Length: 152
Image (cartoon, rainbow, N blue to C red; front, side, top):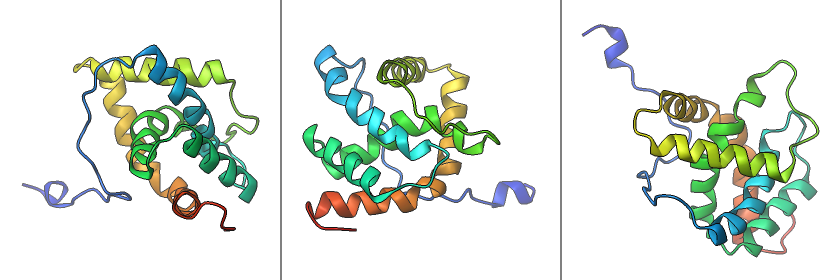
C-alpha cells in the first residue's frame, strides 16, 4: 500500500450515520423548505452578517428542528447541492428562489436514494471537503440556537 492508502481524509465535522428515511412527505417538505432556503444563504459568495445568522437560527427554531437535526439537514441535504458556489470564481451573491432551492435539494435526495448515483456520492464528498468554509458561521448559528435572544 502506497502513501495514499495511509493518509486519512480530514473531517471538519463530526460524522453521523446516514439516515435512510425514504422519501419525505409533503408536510415534511413544507416544513423543511424554509430551513433549506435559510441554510442555502451560508453558501452565498458574500460575507455572512449577524442579521443573516439570526434569520437562519429563527427559521430553524420556527421549524422546531433540534440543533443536531438542523446540522444533519445542512450537511446531508443543503451542502451537497450548494457547496459548488463557494468554489466558483463568480459565486452566487443574490441567493436562490425558494422553488429552486426546494427542487434542487429534492433532486439531490432522490439521487442519493439511488445507490448507484455517482453524482450524489461526488456531491457528498465535495461538500465534506468544503465544510470548513461554512463551519465558523454554522458554529455561531448553533450558539444562537442554544441561547435564543443572546447577541453573537
